[in-house]
Length: 457
Length: 175
Image 1 (spheres, rainbow over the protein chains, first blue to last red):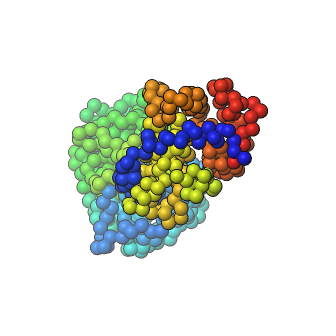
Image 2 (image 1 turned 135 degrees about the vertical axis):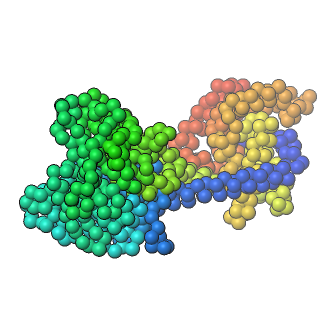
Image 3 (image 1 turned 180 degrees about the horizontal axis):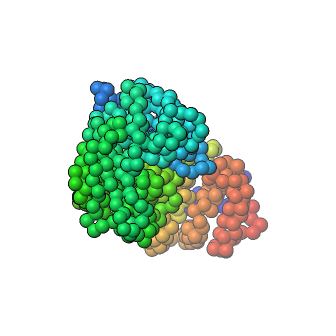
């Protein structure tokens, strides 16, 4: 049966072909198709390269195996630092020989399984420093070259120093946590900074000798431990050469009170004083400030002392001063906002490095600012998702090359999720491709206007 | 390339007729056919390996006509331009009524949506079943039924003078 509409269609199209089909239709279409094919190949190649790059950057940082950072010569240190410390979908434990690392970051989200100290590479890859027991003595020490890492493995000890390039571990069973009643030979004080000697042969820890003799434990890379009582000289603040220790003490708590002074005393490794200077700020000690016990730190060359005063007038504001250890005179100062406590200040070469908690970007946004002669320079930013607090740097890392591709120090949320966003876009493109293939299936048969059909001409 | 050109030479007239029905205008049909064939040429080796290329070409023709070819504004502009010239219609002095019927049908078709035109062409020109039409257009059978019904109702409204072709009570069946 033939419908009238079909006849009408036949009649309508009976002589239309000559007006639609040009003589060179096949050749023209073939050339256009070749151009389209070339464009498609170029686009597909670009997308494939992009996808591979994204996958490499997305998956490889999550891999748990050791990173190939072991120096060939065995003595090379870390050569750069990450500008961004971002989230990782999976964080493995620190391998035995990851090679020199750039620093450690403290993650403080108590509800997270990642709570605790984490080591990061110069490219920002994170490893969990296990075991983490949350004791007050849990304050790792990282050598300036990023090779040696010292930390208390448990409240009962031992303290270990690991060579991250060779995997060699030196154990100090006599070191324990000061918060427990166990009769360890030496007890490490909580939340206190520690200092490597200029030659890297010794590590200075704020410690005490039971029952109540405060001082410093000096750990040798050969496994030896010696104790230097502080003898009312204050807190240890670092080294002034390979055989001299520096202690800092404030007389009184009120800078406005008469007789208030801050003294830096140099001793030998047994704690015997060999010299002392009174620190003399150019404009006097701030009346609204107080000395941060974690802040004093000697410069790597042992000639200067860095001291931070917390100012009650400002929100997390501190006055950071540099003093000469030869005469106590001030060599420079700067006021820094958003300083994080109790994270101590440190040195990156001859430049002070001050810990920050960036404002208006959520809780736990750790950062560090270098007080360079040309002005303060922020060097790192951390993902708010990580809830970070303190950073411990290998000084050599900050003297090296920054790694922050592609967003550097930017803080918008999407800069932390760009890999996931790209993967999502890539998956959508894959779904779209599948859909496109689906609609390219051949048309079902029969068709009257096909070879052998009613309109085959 | 030669086999592609052979294919185009052999099948272009039939494809042109379908393209004309799908667009309602010779200029648009020419563009649609050119666009479709260039896309087929892009994958010609793959298409040929799959057997007869024509079902693939026709699928592409319908898909491009319904979904991907030209913006609505561009189509409208082409329709308006085409309304000024109708050289493709036969115009014998002794067949004035036939010419008028073609003009009315063509203008009515042009005022349908691309999907409605495609449904009508697939059902009443290609002789496909409702199931096959649904598969061709990637939609459900019920959608094909409703689109067919709406398209015919619209044609009756637009061209009441062609009531004997698709008016109420007129048997409209696919062959």
